[in-house]
Picture: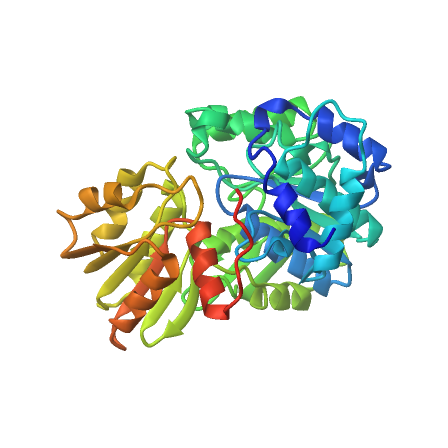
Length: 425
Protein backbone atom coordinates (compact mmCIF):
# COMPACT_ATOMS: atom_id res chain seq x y z
CA UNK A 1 0.00 0.00 0.00
CA UNK A 2 1.23 3.48 -0.79
CA UNK A 3 0.60 6.74 1.06
CA UNK A 4 -2.64 7.58 -0.75
CA UNK A 5 -4.03 4.06 -0.32
CA UNK A 6 -3.40 4.26 3.43
CA UNK A 7 -5.02 7.67 3.75
CA UNK A 8 -8.06 6.52 1.80
CA UNK A 9 -8.55 3.65 4.24
CA UNK A 10 -7.96 5.80 7.31
CA UNK A 11 -10.40 8.47 6.21
CA UNK A 12 -13.12 5.85 5.89
CA UNK A 13 -12.88 5.01 9.59
CA UNK A 14 -15.09 6.23 12.41
CA UNK A 15 -14.33 9.88 13.06
CA UNK A 16 -15.19 10.32 16.70
CA UNK A 17 -14.81 7.74 19.42
CA UNK A 18 -14.36 9.56 22.71
CA UNK A 19 -17.14 7.58 24.41
CA UNK A 20 -15.60 4.27 23.39
CA UNK A 21 -12.95 4.21 26.11
CA UNK A 22 -9.28 3.24 26.11
CA UNK A 23 -9.40 -0.57 26.04
CA UNK A 24 -9.00 -0.90 22.27
CA UNK A 25 -6.03 1.46 21.95
CA UNK A 26 -4.46 -0.31 24.94
CA UNK A 27 -4.87 -3.67 23.20
CA UNK A 28 -3.34 -2.34 19.99
CA UNK A 29 -0.36 -0.82 21.79
CA UNK A 30 0.18 -3.98 23.79
CA UNK A 31 0.41 -5.97 20.55
CA UNK A 32 2.92 -3.38 19.30
CA UNK A 33 5.05 -3.95 22.43
CA UNK A 34 3.82 -0.76 24.15
CA UNK A 35 5.79 1.87 22.25
CA UNK A 36 4.32 4.62 24.46
CA UNK A 37 6.49 3.35 27.33
CA UNK A 38 9.75 3.79 25.41
CA UNK A 39 10.07 7.57 25.50
CA UNK A 40 9.56 10.38 28.00
CA UNK A 41 6.31 12.18 27.26
CA UNK A 42 4.71 15.52 27.97
CA UNK A 43 0.92 15.30 27.67
CA UNK A 44 -0.97 18.48 26.77
CA UNK A 45 -4.73 19.13 26.89
CA UNK A 46 -6.75 22.32 26.74
CA UNK A 47 -9.43 24.16 24.81
CA UNK A 48 -6.94 26.56 23.26
CA UNK A 49 -3.18 26.95 23.34
CA UNK A 50 -2.15 23.31 23.52
CA UNK A 51 -0.67 23.30 20.03
CA UNK A 52 1.24 26.52 20.64
CA UNK A 53 2.65 25.28 23.95
CA UNK A 54 3.57 21.98 22.30
CA UNK A 55 5.35 23.74 19.42
CA UNK A 56 7.29 26.03 21.78
CA UNK A 57 8.35 23.21 24.06
CA UNK A 58 9.34 20.93 21.17
CA UNK A 59 11.52 23.67 19.68
CA UNK A 60 13.15 24.52 23.01
CA UNK A 61 13.93 20.89 23.79
CA UNK A 62 15.32 20.33 20.30
CA UNK A 63 17.68 23.29 20.76
CA UNK A 64 18.64 21.86 24.16
CA UNK A 65 20.02 18.83 22.33
CA UNK A 66 17.19 16.33 22.66
CA UNK A 67 15.60 14.29 19.89
CA UNK A 68 11.97 15.39 20.05
CA UNK A 69 8.73 13.95 18.71
CA UNK A 70 5.64 16.14 18.30
CA UNK A 71 2.11 14.76 17.81
CA UNK A 72 -0.68 17.25 17.06
CA UNK A 73 -3.96 17.45 15.17
CA UNK A 74 -5.51 18.32 12.82
CA UNK A 75 -3.11 18.85 9.96
CA UNK A 76 -3.39 21.94 7.78
CA UNK A 77 -2.34 20.56 4.40
CA UNK A 78 -0.83 17.07 4.67
CA UNK A 79 -1.38 14.24 7.11
CA UNK A 80 2.38 14.00 7.76
CA UNK A 81 2.21 17.24 9.78
CA UNK A 82 0.62 15.33 12.66
CA UNK A 83 3.77 13.30 13.40
CA UNK A 84 6.95 15.37 13.52
CA UNK A 85 10.46 14.42 14.64
CA UNK A 86 13.02 17.16 15.30
CA UNK A 87 10.93 19.67 13.40
CA UNK A 88 10.46 17.53 10.28
CA UNK A 89 7.18 15.73 9.44
CA UNK A 90 7.54 12.03 8.72
CA UNK A 91 7.61 11.24 5.00
CA UNK A 92 4.99 9.47 2.88
CA UNK A 93 6.73 6.10 3.02
CA UNK A 94 6.88 6.28 6.82
CA UNK A 95 3.16 7.06 6.98
CA UNK A 96 2.38 4.03 4.83
CA UNK A 97 4.72 1.77 6.81
CA UNK A 98 3.32 2.87 10.17
CA UNK A 99 -0.26 2.44 9.03
CA UNK A 100 0.37 -1.10 7.83
CA UNK A 101 2.15 -2.04 11.06
CA UNK A 102 -0.86 -0.93 13.09
CA UNK A 103 -3.30 -2.50 10.64
CA UNK A 104 -1.66 -5.92 11.01
CA UNK A 105 -2.66 -6.06 14.68
CA UNK A 106 -5.86 -8.10 14.67
CA UNK A 107 -6.48 -8.86 18.34
CA UNK A 108 -8.83 -6.00 19.14
CA UNK A 109 -12.45 -5.86 20.24
CA UNK A 110 -13.58 -3.43 17.51
CA UNK A 111 -12.31 -1.43 14.56
CA UNK A 112 -10.05 1.46 15.48
CA UNK A 113 -11.19 5.03 15.02
CA UNK A 114 -9.17 7.37 12.82
CA UNK A 115 -7.63 9.07 15.85
CA UNK A 116 -6.75 5.78 17.51
CA UNK A 117 -4.92 4.76 14.33
CA UNK A 118 -2.96 8.00 14.14
CA UNK A 119 -2.12 7.87 17.85
CA UNK A 120 -0.78 4.32 17.62
CA UNK A 121 1.21 5.31 14.53
CA UNK A 122 2.72 8.32 16.31
CA UNK A 123 3.70 6.34 19.40
CA UNK A 124 5.27 3.61 17.25
CA UNK A 125 7.18 6.19 15.19
CA UNK A 126 8.57 7.90 18.27
CA UNK A 127 9.67 4.60 19.81
CA UNK A 128 11.16 3.37 16.53
CA UNK A 129 13.10 6.61 16.08
CA UNK A 130 14.30 6.59 19.71
CA UNK A 131 13.13 10.09 20.57
CA UNK A 132 14.18 11.41 23.96
CA UNK A 133 11.00 13.39 24.50
CA UNK A 134 7.60 13.28 22.83
CA UNK A 135 5.18 16.18 23.11
CA UNK A 136 1.71 14.68 22.81
CA UNK A 137 -1.40 16.79 22.24
CA UNK A 138 -4.80 15.31 23.08
CA UNK A 139 -7.35 15.10 20.31
CA UNK A 140 -10.41 15.99 22.36
CA UNK A 141 -10.92 16.17 26.10
CA UNK A 142 -8.44 14.01 27.94
CA UNK A 143 -9.93 11.35 30.21
CA UNK A 144 -11.08 9.10 27.36
CA UNK A 145 -8.79 10.46 24.67
CA UNK A 146 -6.71 7.80 22.91
CA UNK A 147 -3.51 9.56 23.99
CA UNK A 148 -4.38 9.04 27.65
CA UNK A 149 -2.68 5.66 27.75
CA UNK A 150 0.51 7.61 28.43
CA UNK A 151 2.29 7.80 31.76
CA UNK A 152 3.89 11.19 31.13
CA UNK A 153 6.65 12.97 32.98
CA UNK A 154 4.65 16.23 32.89
CA UNK A 155 1.02 17.07 32.10
CA UNK A 156 -0.19 20.48 30.93
CA UNK A 157 -3.76 21.78 30.77
CA UNK A 158 -3.60 25.11 28.99
CA UNK A 159 -7.12 26.52 29.17
CA UNK A 160 -10.78 25.61 29.56
CA UNK A 161 -13.60 26.98 27.43
CA UNK A 162 -16.92 25.82 26.03
CA UNK A 163 -16.21 23.58 23.04
CA UNK A 164 -17.18 20.07 21.90
CA UNK A 165 -20.02 20.22 24.43
CA UNK A 166 -21.77 17.18 22.95
CA UNK A 167 -18.78 15.07 23.96
CA UNK A 168 -17.28 16.90 26.93
CA UNK A 169 -20.20 18.53 28.74
CA UNK A 170 -21.98 21.88 28.69
CA UNK A 171 -20.18 23.65 31.55
CA UNK A 172 -16.55 24.57 32.11
CA UNK A 173 -16.53 22.36 35.21
CA UNK A 174 -17.64 19.31 33.23
CA UNK A 175 -15.10 20.03 30.51
CA UNK A 176 -12.40 20.52 33.15
CA UNK A 177 -13.29 17.11 34.59
CA UNK A 178 -12.65 15.49 31.21
CA UNK A 179 -9.37 17.31 30.66
CA UNK A 180 -8.23 16.66 34.24
CA UNK A 181 -8.31 12.99 33.33
CA UNK A 182 -4.75 13.35 32.01
CA UNK A 183 -3.44 14.11 35.51
CA UNK A 184 -1.49 11.08 36.70
CA UNK A 185 -0.19 10.08 40.16
CA UNK A 186 2.84 12.13 41.25
CA UNK A 187 3.13 13.67 37.77
CA UNK A 188 3.57 17.48 37.75
CA UNK A 189 0.62 19.36 36.25
CA UNK A 190 1.05 22.84 34.74
CA UNK A 191 -2.01 24.98 34.02
CA UNK A 192 -3.35 28.39 33.11
CA UNK A 193 -7.01 27.45 33.49
CA UNK A 194 -8.96 30.61 34.29
CA UNK A 195 -12.60 29.99 35.28
CA UNK A 196 -12.34 29.41 39.02
CA UNK A 197 -14.80 26.53 39.02
CA UNK A 198 -12.82 24.83 36.29
CA UNK A 199 -9.55 25.45 38.10
CA UNK A 200 -10.97 23.93 41.30
CA UNK A 201 -11.65 20.74 39.36
CA UNK A 202 -8.02 20.69 38.18
CA UNK A 203 -6.72 21.46 41.68
CA UNK A 204 -8.83 18.76 43.32
CA UNK A 205 -7.77 16.16 40.78
CA UNK A 206 -4.11 17.09 41.28
CA UNK A 207 -4.52 16.73 45.04
CA UNK A 208 -6.24 13.37 44.62
CA UNK A 209 -3.36 12.15 42.46
CA UNK A 210 -0.63 13.69 44.65
CA UNK A 211 0.44 15.58 41.53
CA UNK A 212 2.48 18.78 42.09
CA UNK A 213 0.46 21.70 40.71
CA UNK A 214 2.05 24.67 38.94
CA UNK A 215 -0.39 27.47 38.17
CA UNK A 216 0.64 30.36 35.95
CA UNK A 217 0.32 33.48 38.06
CA UNK A 218 1.13 31.64 41.28
CA UNK A 219 4.17 29.36 41.14
CA UNK A 220 5.47 31.11 38.00
CA UNK A 221 4.57 34.38 36.28
CA UNK A 222 5.05 36.26 33.04
CA UNK A 223 5.27 40.04 32.68
CA UNK A 224 4.62 41.68 29.35
CA UNK A 225 6.48 44.85 28.41
CA UNK A 226 6.26 47.01 25.30
CA UNK A 227 8.85 45.15 23.25
CA UNK A 228 9.45 41.93 25.16
CA UNK A 229 8.41 39.93 28.20
CA UNK A 230 9.95 38.33 31.26
CA UNK A 231 9.43 34.98 32.95
CA UNK A 232 9.63 34.70 36.74
CA UNK A 233 9.95 30.99 37.24
CA UNK A 234 10.31 28.25 39.80
CA UNK A 235 14.06 28.69 40.20
CA UNK A 236 15.05 30.93 37.31
CA UNK A 237 14.05 34.33 35.97
CA UNK A 238 14.51 35.18 32.29
CA UNK A 239 14.21 38.65 30.82
CA UNK A 240 14.07 40.29 27.39
CA UNK A 241 12.27 37.37 25.81
CA UNK A 242 10.38 37.52 22.52
CA UNK A 243 8.07 34.95 20.98
CA UNK A 244 7.76 34.44 17.23
CA UNK A 245 4.06 33.62 17.62
CA UNK A 246 1.75 36.63 17.46
CA UNK A 247 -0.74 37.61 20.16
CA UNK A 248 -0.41 38.59 23.80
CA UNK A 249 -1.92 35.24 24.83
CA UNK A 250 1.19 33.52 23.48
CA UNK A 251 3.20 35.02 26.32
CA UNK A 252 1.09 33.04 28.78
CA UNK A 253 1.52 29.94 26.63
CA UNK A 254 5.26 30.55 26.73
CA UNK A 255 5.08 30.71 30.53
CA UNK A 256 3.71 27.18 30.66
CA UNK A 257 6.29 25.90 28.18
CA UNK A 258 9.11 27.46 30.19
CA UNK A 259 7.83 25.95 33.43
CA UNK A 260 7.94 22.53 31.79
CA UNK A 261 11.46 23.24 30.54
CA UNK A 262 12.55 24.12 34.09
CA UNK A 263 11.08 20.90 35.45
CA UNK A 264 12.80 18.84 32.77
CA UNK A 265 16.23 20.46 32.96
CA UNK A 266 16.64 21.19 36.67
CA UNK A 267 19.86 23.16 37.10
CA UNK A 268 20.93 22.62 33.46
CA UNK A 269 18.74 25.31 31.94
CA UNK A 270 20.07 27.73 29.33
CA UNK A 271 18.81 31.27 28.75
CA UNK A 272 20.16 31.11 25.19
CA UNK A 273 18.12 27.98 24.49
CA UNK A 274 15.01 29.65 25.93
CA UNK A 275 15.59 32.83 23.94
CA UNK A 276 16.30 31.08 20.65
CA UNK A 277 13.57 28.49 21.14
CA UNK A 278 10.89 31.15 21.51
CA UNK A 279 12.27 33.38 18.76
CA UNK A 280 12.38 30.61 16.16
CA UNK A 281 9.25 28.62 16.98
CA UNK A 282 6.78 28.05 14.15
CA UNK A 283 3.12 27.15 14.48
CA UNK A 284 1.46 27.89 11.12
CA UNK A 285 -2.07 29.16 10.76
CA UNK A 286 -2.26 30.79 14.19
CA UNK A 287 -2.25 34.59 13.88
CA UNK A 288 0.12 34.07 10.97
CA UNK A 289 0.94 37.16 8.93
CA UNK A 290 1.19 36.40 5.21
CA UNK A 291 1.97 39.93 4.00
CA UNK A 292 2.17 43.51 5.25
CA UNK A 293 0.84 45.51 2.27
CA UNK A 294 -1.97 44.71 2.41
CA UNK A 295 -1.86 43.25 5.90
CA UNK A 296 -2.96 39.64 5.44
CA UNK A 297 -3.53 37.51 8.52
CA UNK A 298 -4.71 33.91 8.75
CA UNK A 299 -5.87 32.43 12.03
CA UNK A 300 -7.56 29.12 12.76
CA UNK A 301 -9.71 30.54 15.58
CA UNK A 302 -12.64 28.14 15.85
CA UNK A 303 -14.27 28.79 19.22
CA UNK A 304 -15.41 31.77 21.28
CA UNK A 305 -12.22 32.02 23.32
CA UNK A 306 -9.98 32.00 20.24
CA UNK A 307 -12.19 34.46 18.36
CA UNK A 308 -11.95 36.83 21.32
CA UNK A 309 -8.15 36.63 21.20
CA UNK A 310 -8.21 37.27 17.46
CA UNK A 311 -10.56 40.22 17.87
CA UNK A 312 -8.30 41.78 20.51
CA UNK A 313 -5.27 41.27 18.27
CA UNK A 314 -7.03 42.96 15.36
CA UNK A 315 -8.03 45.91 17.54
CA UNK A 316 -4.39 46.44 18.47
CA UNK A 317 -3.01 45.82 14.99
CA UNK A 318 -5.32 47.30 12.35
CA UNK A 319 -4.52 50.95 13.11
CA UNK A 320 -7.42 52.18 11.00
CA UNK A 321 -6.97 49.77 8.08
CA UNK A 322 -10.28 48.78 6.44
CA UNK A 323 -10.79 45.09 7.19
CA UNK A 324 -12.11 42.35 4.92
CA UNK A 325 -12.99 39.13 6.71
CA UNK A 326 -12.94 35.77 4.94
CA UNK A 327 -14.74 33.33 7.19
CA UNK A 328 -15.99 29.74 7.24
CA UNK A 329 -17.24 27.75 10.22
CA UNK A 330 -18.23 24.22 11.13
CA UNK A 331 -21.86 23.51 11.92
CA UNK A 332 -21.33 22.75 15.63
CA UNK A 333 -20.12 26.27 16.41
CA UNK A 334 -22.11 29.05 18.17
CA UNK A 335 -21.83 31.22 15.09
CA UNK A 336 -23.68 34.25 16.46
CA UNK A 337 -21.37 34.58 19.47
CA UNK A 338 -18.34 33.95 17.28
CA UNK A 339 -19.27 36.39 14.53
CA UNK A 340 -20.37 39.30 16.72
CA UNK A 341 -16.96 40.59 17.91
CA UNK A 342 -15.42 40.20 14.45
CA UNK A 343 -18.09 41.73 12.25
CA UNK A 344 -18.02 44.90 14.34
CA UNK A 345 -14.55 45.51 12.92
CA UNK A 346 -15.21 44.48 9.31
CA UNK A 347 -16.01 46.70 6.34
CA UNK A 348 -16.48 43.64 4.14
CA UNK A 349 -17.22 39.97 4.80
CA UNK A 350 -16.74 37.06 2.41
CA UNK A 351 -18.38 33.88 3.66
CA UNK A 352 -16.88 30.63 2.46
CA UNK A 353 -17.24 26.89 3.09
CA UNK A 354 -14.37 24.48 3.80
CA UNK A 355 -14.46 21.11 2.08
CA UNK A 356 -15.55 19.11 5.09
CA UNK A 357 -19.00 17.64 5.59
CA UNK A 358 -19.46 19.42 8.92
CA UNK A 359 -19.15 22.94 7.50
CA UNK A 360 -22.05 25.30 8.10
CA UNK A 361 -24.32 26.49 5.28
CA UNK A 362 -22.94 29.91 4.20
CA UNK A 363 -26.48 31.25 3.84
CA UNK A 364 -27.00 30.93 7.60
CA UNK A 365 -23.96 33.12 8.24
CA UNK A 366 -25.02 35.53 5.49
CA UNK A 367 -28.47 36.10 7.00
CA UNK A 368 -26.96 36.84 10.41
CA UNK A 369 -24.15 39.10 9.22
CA UNK A 370 -25.94 41.07 6.48
CA UNK A 371 -27.52 43.70 8.80
CA UNK A 372 -24.19 44.36 10.53
CA UNK A 373 -21.57 44.56 7.76
CA UNK A 374 -21.62 47.09 4.89
CA UNK A 375 -20.72 44.46 2.28
CA UNK A 376 -21.40 40.72 2.58
CA UNK A 377 -20.93 38.07 -0.10
CA UNK A 378 -20.72 34.29 -0.42
CA UNK A 379 -17.89 32.57 -2.30
CA UNK A 380 -18.11 28.87 -1.40
CA UNK A 381 -14.64 27.84 -2.58
CA UNK A 382 -12.09 28.86 0.06
CA UNK A 383 -9.22 29.61 -2.29
CA UNK A 384 -11.49 31.64 -4.58
CA UNK A 385 -12.75 33.61 -1.56
CA UNK A 386 -9.20 34.31 -0.42
CA UNK A 387 -7.92 35.47 -3.80
CA UNK A 388 -11.01 37.63 -4.32
CA UNK A 389 -10.31 39.39 -1.02
CA UNK A 390 -6.67 39.92 -1.98
CA UNK A 391 -7.57 41.18 -5.46
CA UNK A 392 -9.80 43.90 -4.02
CA UNK A 393 -7.48 44.92 -1.16
CA UNK A 394 -5.42 48.09 -1.35
CA UNK A 395 -1.95 48.24 0.17
CA UNK A 396 -3.41 50.10 3.15
CA UNK A 397 -6.18 47.53 3.74
CA UNK A 398 -6.27 44.39 5.87
CA UNK A 399 -7.55 40.89 5.14
CA UNK A 400 -8.19 38.31 7.85
CA UNK A 401 -9.05 34.67 7.11
CA UNK A 402 -10.49 32.75 10.05
CA UNK A 403 -13.18 30.51 11.54
CA UNK A 404 -11.63 27.07 11.16
CA UNK A 405 -8.28 25.36 10.77
CA UNK A 406 -9.80 23.64 7.74
CA UNK A 407 -10.30 27.03 6.09
CA UNK A 408 -6.72 27.96 6.90
CA UNK A 409 -5.46 24.67 5.51
CA UNK A 410 -7.16 25.29 2.19
CA UNK A 411 -5.70 28.80 1.99
CA UNK A 412 -2.19 27.62 2.76
CA UNK A 413 -2.56 24.81 0.24
CA UNK A 414 -3.61 27.31 -2.42
CA UNK A 415 -0.66 29.57 -1.60
CA UNK A 416 1.81 26.69 -1.78
CA UNK A 417 0.07 25.02 -4.73
CA UNK A 418 0.01 21.81 -2.73
CA UNK A 419 -3.03 19.50 -2.86
CA UNK A 420 -4.80 19.20 0.48
CA UNK A 421 -5.06 15.76 2.03
CA UNK A 422 -8.65 14.88 2.86
CA UNK A 423 -9.52 16.70 6.05
CA UNK A 424 -10.58 14.97 9.18
CA UNK A 425 -10.98 16.38 12.68
